[in-house]
Length: 246
Image (cartoon, rainbow, N blue to C red):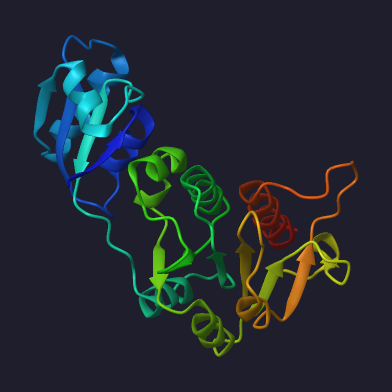
């Protein structure tokens, strides 16, 4: 089955990006908005074929009507290898900054986390082969084109991956809500590090938690005791940004 990006912004980012080869742009018949015309012009500049389709056909291809009149057929998603991710990160003049997701299965949360990771300048995101949400059109839509720029690595064994990252002299910080966790805002996040975010329901798995050098918590002031995983990940990543900018 073909992969499609849908929506004005994801399609635009997909046409501009180099991670997934654009195969064909499908635009709704009669669509004359300036944004759709911009997509058509961008596709022409990139040498991507453009086809006009009835709205019903676009709806059928992705299973719903929330596409804003634009679909981009792309090559299957290709994950980067861990070694490639590390090499790319080390070529920058910044400390290592990676995000590991342990059991994020909701596509909207996954996409939102990827969007935040790209905005925070994270060098890449690592997920497990099992207990992880696959890259889908819903994920790409929620990520608003982030995967056109942000490296995503899939590994067979997250625990073994964290051991390897420790060998790269990176600190492994796991987000948790336990009393023994240290406040995120009292921790030094300026050196090489890996942030690990667990699932919504059960958090970090014991085998992953065991690999963390330190557990970090986000101080909560109200009556709610926990945050959505994508919100917690965003707060934590931008605390890294804040400290390194200061």
